Image (tube, rainbow, N blue to C red; front, side, top):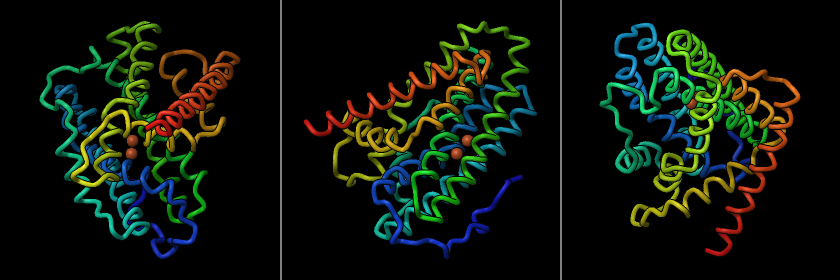
Length: 274
Ligand SMILES: [Fe+2]
Ligand SMILES: [Fe+2]
């Protein structure tokens, strides 16, 4: 079912001279979050307990997410031979948990859950596109392009299921907007910050959310260019039911990009003070 396989990548094309060391911590953090897709599939299958089509799709989705983790982890071990992907993943699993044994979505409805999934895939597809554009290292560029294409297909998958449920649950545009923006702002919660901590900081160092999210965001936000943000906002508009590629959307895209740059500067100042 996979659209590509890890063995098909040209691993001999890795060029250590073209590795930007600022990108390595981002790749390490992303690898463990991706591999955690299996846990998330368990959660999704509990939420959609009587929907065999969606449950099968969630299993296929998780296989692809794990492959993303494995490809990024393998690349990070080439870039930093002292680092071990599976050890880092075990540390991440010990430190970050989501409540899997649920019988309903934490978003209040199945439509809400699928909107949140669309937001995550919007974030990942834009992140890997931005990372592919930011790196000159040919292997990482190729891996990120493959992953970004998967993430866009995942967005489509959750979007189509969301429309199916929207017909029954009838969430209004503002409810959809609230859920979508709520999930976007959660990117500064513990999932990415603890991934940064467990993949980049020594085992004995205590976890400090503020430090770790600042270290993660200061680099991650720096990769984005206006064109990546244009895509993000058009995918968000599509999900909540506004017209993408409209005047309002291009205005929103400029506003969001300015906001991201301000956030990045804020994290930079925070780290300079610390
Ligand atoms: Fe992924
Ligand atoms: Fe994905």
